[in-house]
Amino acid sequence: MTTRPLYRPARRELLAGGAALLALGAARGDAAAVVRAAAPDLAELRDLTAAARPIDAAERAARLARAQALMRANNIGAVLIEPGSSLIYFTGVRWGRSERLTAAILPVEGEPCVVTPFFEEPSVRQSLAVPASVRVWQEDEDPLAVVAGFLRDRGLATRPVGVEESVRYFVQAGLARALPGVRLVGADAVVRGCRMIKTAAEIALMRCATDVTVAAYRWTHARVEAGMTGQQIGALMTAATTRLGGESEFAMALIGPAAALPHGTRAVSRVADGQVVLMDCGCTVQGYQSDVSRTWVHGSASAEQRRVWDQVKAGQALAFRTARVGVAAGAVDDAVRAYYERLGYGPGYRLPGLSHRTGHGIGMDGHEPVNLVHGETTRLAPGMCFSDEPGLYLLGKFGVRLEDCFHVTADGPRWFSEPPESIERPV
Image 1 (spheres, rainbow, N blue to C red):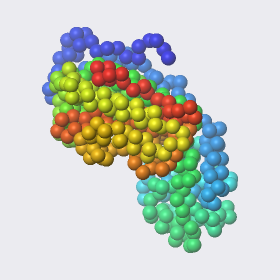
Image 2 (tube, rainbow, N blue to C red; image 1 turned 45 degrees about the vertical axis):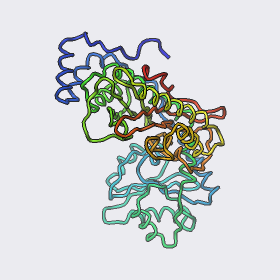
Image 3 (cartoon, helix red, strand yellow; image 1 turned 30 degrees about the horizontal axis):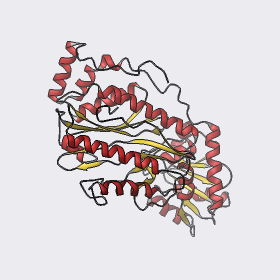
Image 4 (cartoon, one colour; image 1 turned 90 degrees about the horizontal axis):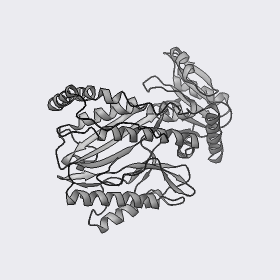
């Protein structure tokens, strides 16, 4: 780690013009004006992602080998994947979904195949990051017949075809028509079996994304002023994240009673002394995400706010201690919920208390299988990554959420970001 500051503290006395613009922007609810006022400080932030190493060819080859081993173990002849993070994971192809099918077929042996419209083939080939064939279809042809043709050519027409969990119904139905008698099965054992276990390269990218988010929090927290709206605070966070090299995914700031609603409200609230500010923010670096939440009080915290903050900190620490190899994912949620119930919250998901799961999987998507939620029986294994965010919410008053992500190792969990020390030092 460098010893040079990644940010500098707010200097409210620095530029009278900047301060005036900040006040004007706050009064008008103008998020852009607030960002413009902060431009001199933004200019001093440096890119933290320059050394981030993208996923290389060797890692992509290992993914396919792992997927094919899991196909053999589960008697699956091929896996069908539509555009999205799983397509990027296995092929590198970044594509959007529409009524025109682009899809990949991973066979149990040999190279994958990408099926795409004829006029899209050059673009698909540009983003393809693995050895693969490309088969095209014309506008007056059935793309699922092309998929079926590939399966027949590879001798896989009579083998079960695994369907990635987000593949749309019309694709599955179309393949059933094009390949009568085909047996379609879920591909979770293959796709989740690969993606849930992160490699060192993936973890390094997630750590880099988290470093960006934490640095952006430090910069933003020092610039939160009375009168600001959540939108303005989020705009500052987004601007800092971008300057630090991350691709901002979300930057939510909830103020006062709105913080009791985990995903907020449309009502506009403004920062004032004694009010809770709850932020939930994340970014992407080389396709991998961060997710960090911080809560503090603008001005002085009340005894109740301080007590709840400390209880959430203890709940987060309990979840972290519980998340050991071999423990059921649901047991992590159960441990926190039992602790909160002893404090008088709940029971279960009732309010006041913890109304959502303790955590979710994270990686290329902000939310991935599996969750730290009651009833989830999947056992934790090295390489799994989760958020740890057991918030407490008091409707009509405020909410507190502290969220940091961790990855599971044989020696216990490891944080991507260190949890905050106290309500006075939230970042």
